[in-house]
Image 1: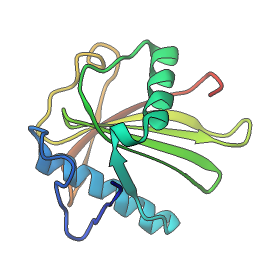
Image 2: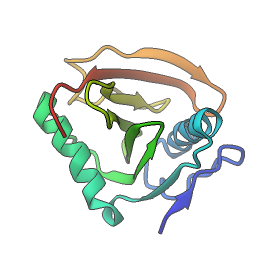
Image 3: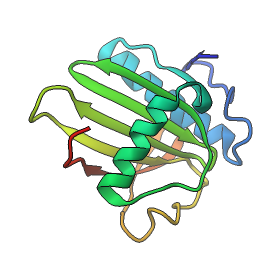
Length: 154
C-alpha cells in the first residue's frame, strides 16, 4: 500500500525492521522535503514487493554499470518523473538509500546516488569503490553520500 512521506512529522512507517529505522526515516523525509520544495512533487513510496519493475530497473543498472548486488533487503521503492527526469528510489533495511536519476532526453544527466543513514556502516558492496561525503540534515542527522555517472542506456 503506498505511503505519502511526511517530512514535517517523520515516521518510521514501512521501515520498522531496520536497525537504523529512525535515521532512515529521517533520510526518507529529507528526500521528500527536497522534491516538494524543488519540484512541488509529493514523495510516495510503496513496499518493494509491490513495485518489482522499479526494483528490477535499479538492480539492472547497478549490476550492469558496476557489478553491484546488495545483500540488504529492499523495504520500499518509488519511481516518478519530474522536470524531464525519471527518478527511482530504493530504501534498504540496512539504512541505505539508492536513487537513480535518469534524464529522459538523450544527453541529459544520468547517475546513481547512494546515501547512508546516520549510524550505519558503509555496505561491503560499496566500501572499496566509493568515498562518501558528509552533509548535515535537520531531519536525518549526518548523511553520507556518493554517486556514479550512468554510461549505458536503460
